[in-house]
Length: 602
Image (tube, rainbow, N blue to C red; front, side, top):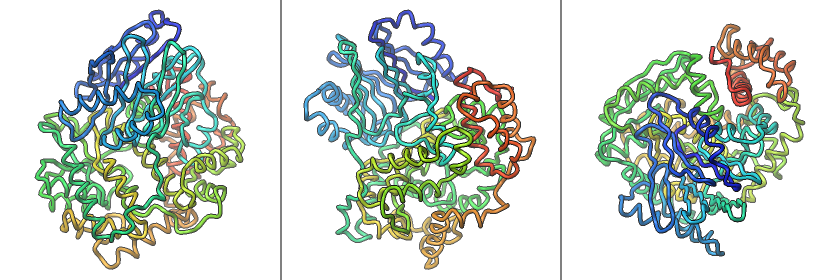
């Protein structure tokens, strides 16, 4: 993953660690386009970035402070950007009681996907600030001796004094597909929360975090007094502004177009703004995207845009290894079939690529609340655990040695940390923060390994307005319908690939409600899928790879029950592709980070 990598040593011993730091950086050069560039090289502070030439990292020298910006603030010209960053530098090093509010205001006015690292030249004091939605995942480890911060978990792992995996994180991932809250694969390594200020001072050997300076509360509905048409109009205006702000003259805009609503909304907005772009759609080897293809073709025609269909084969060993090393298991290895799609998009482009996706759209405009009520957090946690279950709690406990109660308790703690009092709103918060802001942002980061990935659905102005609209207007996609009609009625008249009817149809509400009920009821999903759920054959990459790991990788035995894993492997035909993908992802990241080698190397 391209990005910034910081090491602070309170004892001033970085010179002696330079060889190990260089090796750690070399492991982040994922293809021939990547280079490592040293930005700060002192006794107590080292900062570098890795990436390809077009990846956005800028350095700014200010009064007593060096500021390094990874990512982009949208809709801001060069002069305004430098002024805004000077304001940030002042706020970041101000430690009085007003810092939180003032920095929160600064973030509110900063539409972007970014992380900034600031270093005071005289003292070596460091400040780190990320955007309000944590669009660029950042990982942090602090100890009595220093601090390691990186966009790549692999870099942190390589420089830790003692590498240990978080058993609860492994268990949560196998159970629900998520690593909840601040946890990562690694013990004592956190994912930096949205809107966080990290302070690190060599003089005091102290690291503090001012987290979630702008807290998300989905119970706030200040736009409830406006009707659906007025709210849709405001949302459309904000969406168009977000698309225009993300336009970069000279870049080649590629829209990843599916048969859903989110990507077509972006295409419609780009067309309304007369911004040039082309569309690309993939057809996966399993045929899951077959319904998308004819719908995407019609949408592209309605938009008057060039459209390409990319046929993809099954995951290859080299692609799985590349994804493992780029995303460190945070994007499941089953998604490696997409890498040839990204590589083809890059080859087809003659200029810097801006890849536009509909990520985040599903989590802003529809009503994410479940249909049923919950008495308390434990009841909600039980529902969430069942809703997202990959392996049963009993199977996860057998695999990892983690008590079933501990798995559920960690989820309860995550849900309890949300500010909402209504349990249905807590569920919506979970969907937004654990799925959209973490799961999907890791997928977008996978794309950024090739080119910049952006979405207008992440515009803070748009997101906030959407979350502040009443949920009843979002029910059955009512607000989304009015929003699409405001932008481009012709694309609203094309059916949704998954539901088979257009959003303007009288039958759409019924179809959407049935789909939502099926999604919310695991028993329904299992009954509908049944034996049709895809399974791996005994000669598949995943089944063979798991077998080789269990036979030869002693490190797995420290975190997994090898007999329990072998039982799953022997009964692989009884498990879905998704289950085995998750298990193989978890075992592969432990094998790779613990031993420095992978069965995927062949």
